[in-house]
Amino acid sequence: MRSLSRLAPLAFPLGASGCQLAPSVSFLGSFFPAWILCAVVGLLLTLGARQILVRIALDPHLDPRRPFYPCLAVLFTFGLWLVFFGG
Image 1 (tube, rainbow, N blue to C red):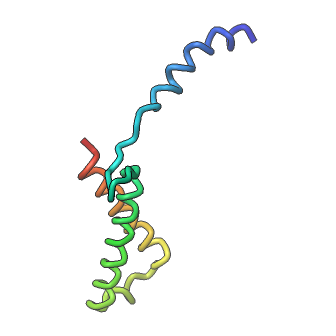
Image 2: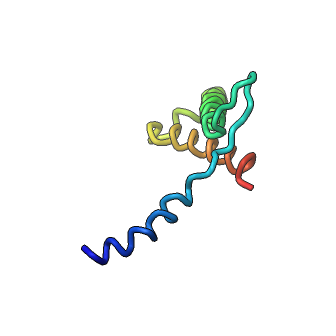
C-alpha cells in the first residue's frame, strides 16, 4: 500500500497530459469540435462514393459490403482529420 501512495503523485501528470483543448471550427458562429465536422464530411463522402460505385456497377462486386462502407467512412474521416488538423 505504501508503494502505491508514492506512485500517486506520478500518475497525475500522466493523466493530465491529454487535457488540452481540442481543435474547434467556427460554423455559423458556433464552435464545433473538429472531429464532428470530419465525421460528418466523411459520411457524406462515403455516400457519394457509394453512388459512384453503384453507377459504375462495381457495388455488386464488393463481396463483404457490411464492413466495406463503414471502413470507407473511417478512411475518409481520418484522412480529413490528418489533412486539415494533423499538423
